[in-house]
Image (tube, rainbow, N blue to C red; front, side):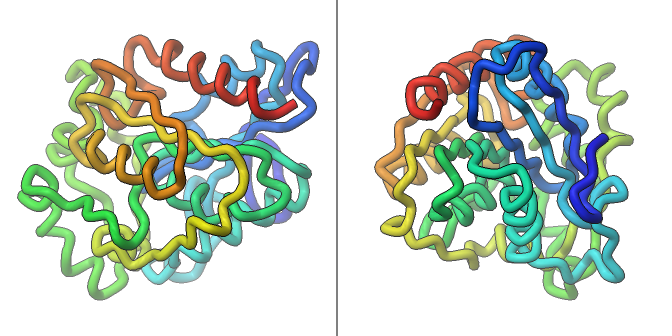
Length: 261
């Protein structure tokens, strides 16, 4: 585990660095760098200096007094602090991390940005019935800005639906509480992003069996930025934990290799 100030990061350095640009992964809600470990190892074998940040209030990183009131803007600050330290980088954000990546993509030190099964900015409706039918029970925590964790049955249905029950059982205890405020900002589309400020190459990755940020949403995000788009057939929201995770990541790395040094 690496430390940048009070932020904790996982890092896998390549045995022989073949890419001058570091690669920074950003996790989603209730998560942490732990679910990106496969990606870090794979990217390092391909010659990337691979990092994954734990956002504030997650797994001991940048402790906060009241997690429930942490905003998406606070998480953006965390990523900006990492970029300030590791230098120009390519940023790969998953889920909420995808929206965070959109929010830092205008920076001159972001060489390329990838948004994987990403949360959407203002103007792109995400909530549909399969999600609404399960997420309404967390509305109180969102409105009151309280930290909360999704029930295991909801996580199985919306996040881990492509994983075997035995694998789900090993992963569920690793999910942590999330900010009610940040969840509200995402759920109700309160975060604007000015696409005209995003000048770096961008890629959006959708997953055909994703129930929480479905491909239709990902294609709209791609249109917003004029981004390249690829779809991971047979995958759901937690791409990095699913069987066959290597193939979509290899495609992402191939795209990055064609656009950054």
